[in-house]
Amino acid sequence: MSKKLFSLLVWALLACGAGAQAQGAYPSKPVTMIVPYPAGGPMDKLARELALPMEKQLGQPIVIQNLSGAGGNLGSAIAVRAAPDGYTLLLNHISMATAPALYRRLGFNPETDFEPLGIMAESPLMLVTRPQIAAGSAVELVRWIAKQPQVKLANGGIGSASHLCGLLLQSSLGIGMTTVPYRGTAPALADLLGGHVDLMCDLTANVLPQVFNGKTRPIGVTSRKPLSVPGASSIPTLEKFGIPSVQVGVWYGLYAPKNTPAAVQARINSALLAAIQTDAFKKAQLASGIDVVRDARNTPAGHREYLHSEIARWTPVIKAAGAYAD
Image (cartoon, rainbow, N blue to C red):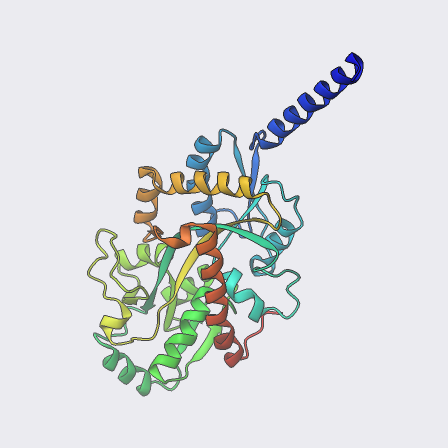
């Protein structure tokens, strides 16, 4: 082999090694985290509380991009078309499991078009009523409902967590109510406070301030254990209240586009796990009544399995209700 050919071969090998190092140096620039809901909402708040400790782990800024619309599907559809390089991530919640049944023209498949990176948090919902409704047990609540010519059950829109909770509530009680959908839980809660509707389920973070100031009456939470939030631990679970079948929580997970390299997925998951164990993140979630997830769902494999099980759980419920969002 000539010296010239040998030199060219060495240069090529060195160049390949440098290229591999450059490719492996993730991340080398800011990362975008798409939040498919408006700024200022519960998911946006969670995203910003998550991004700060993840930035420290990754050594690069995480830019939150709010792309709301179509029940969270607009942002998800944009994320799925992003380059699979780890620089565009999606934070989404239970809608990844309910959207396939709710939308007949979804445009993406949550199971096959994304790489699940880990579930980090889960929030129970709370059933609340107008303060004038006196019901100390499920039996008393059923009796009150039976005496009314019409009971209005509000929700934040078809397919929302509050809507799913309402479906399970009616099924568990065996009583139909007049469902009143709103464009978001904020106007639904406003009408509850104004006495225009009677009951609603919503995220604990949204209703707790109104519970604490006495403007709404808490019936129970949809989790298996009471809240750890100071001042709210005495609110029973719906099971203890006497309504056993309303188990629903809003879980939040991180996703990357399909075919994102395994090494990049592992790097993001490592940063995610470290972030959710920080005191600042845990305290912020506790104050909102949100549980930090610490189980197999933190892993990409566990996240994928749980997403599959949630789709299997909610699809027949939504189809039985005939509730389509498109």
